[in-house]
Length: 186
Image 1 (cartoon, rainbow, N blue to C red):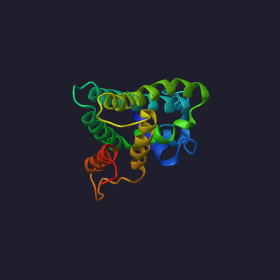
Image 2 (cartoon, rainbow, N blue to C red):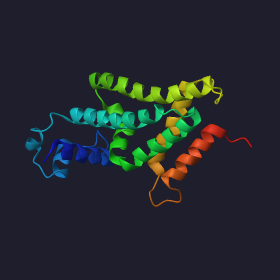
Image 3 (cartoon, helix red, strand yellow):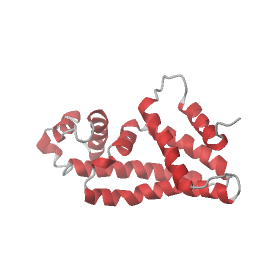
Image 4 (cartoon, rainbow, N blue to C red):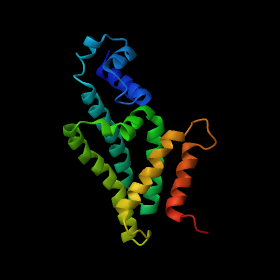
């Protein structure tokens, strides 16, 4: 039994039961350990939650920042970022669910440690939108608000998307990009 096994199981348990509904016993059972043995690997649910959030943001930062570093126009960057972000969410559904829905369960000290990483990730998006404004590709009065709106659309996808559904995640990301970049007006 490795720490990685425990973290993967915990992410699945948190997604299924929610952080507050999950117990250390649930996590121990998921990895076929006794609860006291689990404490040899982790000290608390808060420790597990913070590590899962850190892992999720590290993954996202690595893959999205690689796109922002490319020498391509801001609209193409944003399109690729949307596609990559949604792909990461569906490929890592347990981890993504923890990031999107369980971060509020962090205690004050851990929450304060988590926020700078989250803000750094959000800044990647805001900066690309601002880059598009600066290059006169985009008309956007508030890149921060546009970023939050985009996250609202993308993050909610996790609640309804089905791999066997009518649209692939690539088709969904293309439609989101079109909506953001072209709007609804004819």
